[in-house]
Length: 140
Image (cartoon, rainbow, N blue to C red; front, side, top):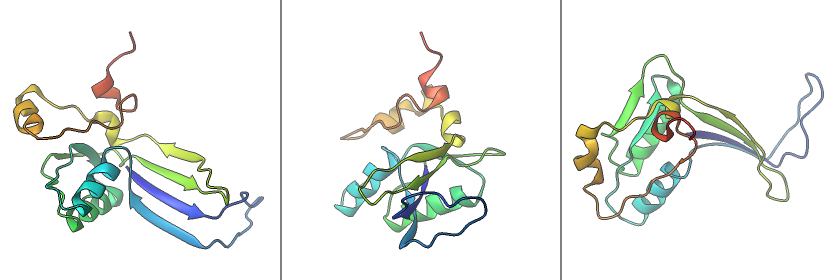
């Protein structure tokens, strides 16, 4: 997932108004990607299993992960589907209301033939449960 963070934001300008803020950042985020980047920064050998679109957001996510030496070979590019992304309007008190676009993450599905290579890890962190339509399956 790509996060676009803006801070501080007290309110959204009316109509076509403009508001100046201190910071706008693009970050690779989500409970899986954020964790893998932090682990890589600590010097651990890491890999990410994910799905991104074949768009500029997916290019940014993969390039950012590679900067931290994260193995991106398990990332699937989904043609015609946008990379999942969130706009976070960070309030001065730290609250982070989110506007999210579902996308390629909904199409991630690990095939049985991939289980051994993916699960052959000292530690395995599963992120995004409840947010991955194909992985989560239908509600029961």
